[in-house]
Length: 335
Ligand SMILES: NC(=O)c1ccc[n+]([C@@H]2O[C@H](COP(=O)([O-])OP(=O)(O)OC[C@H]3O[C@@H](n4cnc5c(N)ncnc54)[C@H](OP(=O)(O)O)[C@@H]3O)[C@@H](O)[C@H]2O)c1
Image 1 (spheres, rainbow, N blue to C red):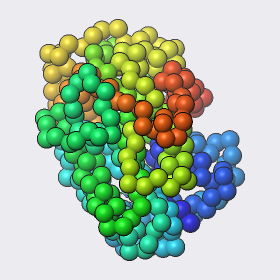
Image 2 (image 1 turned 60 degrees about the vertical axis):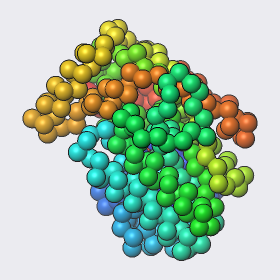
Image 3 (image 1 turned 90 degrees about the vertical axis):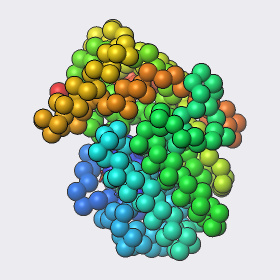
């Protein structure tokens, strides 16, 4: 039996789909209030396969439900996490991303799980020098550029490395921004929502992107090849925000963001957004962290994963095009 956490999210749903369609037995952990719309979308062309998932209700912050979920499990794909750039959610992120991962690791050791794949993030590598090609040997440094999310994912990864030292066979993947049709109010999918709503500005930063189908395929291949005690950056290519946002605009047949947001403008916008979100009790579209990080130029190397798996990544253009198509087919309820 394989356990997947985060199966109602962008990455976990794709991993479940790829496992189930290859006849693997999958148990998926979901919270009591979890929505199933993302996973139903992934199984859209083969809805009958949804029946093959054994759902179990629980929460990774609750040791008892983790123990119940891991009963009789041999392999784990741990994808559950909170992605947030709101300062007020730091405590919750540490609880879910770091403590939740510690629970997953500890109970996996206790239940003698045979293989454990942890979905980390390039954020957990730490913010290194701009302009260089960042690879897996990056060493975390305390820096103002590390977001609270990055700190929580770094703490999570440390728990997984501790588990490895204690005998758990782990492999870690560090994806860059993952593209694919996910929950529009969470993670990278928010970018698509912003462009759909007519985003006019772009920032001068550069970042890595990777398609969710490639993330899933790499995780499964690494587990099948029984590669342990290693981490792998999953990154198709490094692109400017301008290029990425323009491609999303093309996919939606919208006008591409044409105004470069200068540093001083972004500093005003995130402050105004903070006030708006307080008054309206809604999520800010841009925070201090997202505003500052989107002006940085990060380049991630994909040499190690290419050498190990010989993977040919789906291009950003194709990935964006496919994602926009899915949203358009649903007549894009984010309007
Ligand atoms: N998206 C990206 O660009 C990106 C990039 C690099 C790395 N990652 C990493 O990839 C992984 C998956 O991200 P994603 O994009 O799939 O995120 P997502 O769409 O927001 O999904 C997050 C998943 O985690 C689950 N979850 C959250 N808190 C939980 C808890 N306490 N107990 C059990 N499940 C919980 C959510 O369940 P509910 O449905 O109940 O909310 C959801 O299924 C995360 O570890 C993330 O850090 C993401």
